[in-house]
Amino acid sequence: MITANVLVVGRKSDEVARATEALRTRGYAASGEISDDDAIETLRNARVDIVVLGRGIDADSRNRLIETANARCPGVKIVEQFGGFENVISEVEEAKNSH
Image (cartoon, rainbow, N blue to C red):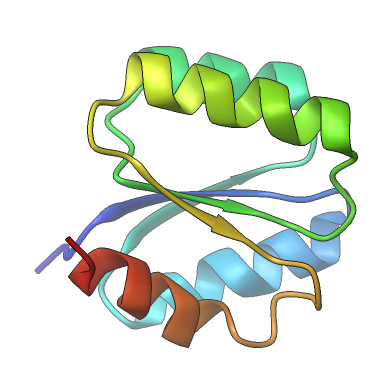
């Protein structure tokens, strides 16, 4: 059973791949992108419940991605990672359960 649709955005493809795989094993429909343009395309064309932004996303990109997510995906939750994706499961769980 899919619990939420999660978009993981980071700059390192191996970290994004590990995070999306970890989320999938927990029942999330997770996809990952390493470029802003690809992430924005996903936000425009897919249902996204939670966006995870990795530590490598600079402030301008972070703001642009958050703005797009809020405009295209009503009720979207944003998880900002500043220490890496090690805690992605617990942080996504927390976001999913917050109101």
